Image 1 (cartoon, rainbow, N blue to C red):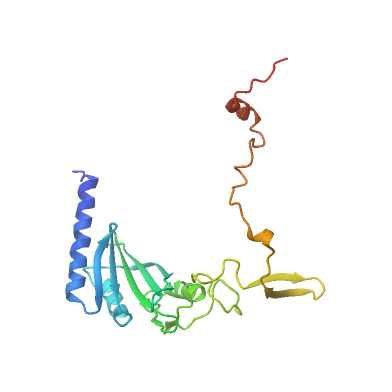
Image 2: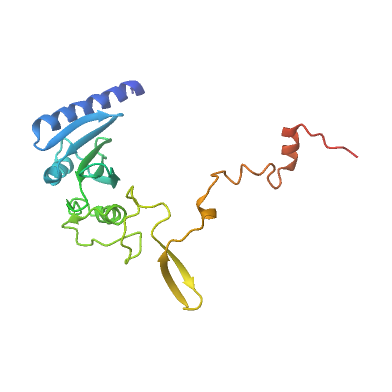
Length: 220
């Protein structure tokens, strides 16, 4: 058995991805761009073309991207369509990956892909919960990480770091209450120093500390 050098395998994979990018960009409608970026194939398309493209990538024997590994959002508040919705696919058959990107705004929903990959329901709920992106055709469009009554979207860039509300237990009312966040200035100043950096000697490490400091322990 002849072992193929890793560099040859890498260049072969790069060639395959480059050929795939050219084919997608020149034969399919609605493809804004298709190129190898940082050794990964990235395709930017439209919301209207999303489902036909993903169906092709999953079912065609030329591609066979059987698994949806991840679906996530990215926020660019300065853009009209501020959100990127990113789909990361894996072909187990050919051992290669592809990233599909579409854009949307705060009000325009994105087609759900849960019929192609049932696991997408979890990812779409997370994207909705954290960014506010809605998915048409998704039968379970509920929040998944925050409370059901939460009204904001924590991963938007304009969401304050301290949040809008805080939850605490009220002893007098004997129940959990929500209140607007109210932090004193002392709690808003952080030195960002790791607590480990302030410790000269860890418990049980006294001897090693003495050696590092050049301290010679007196012997009786």
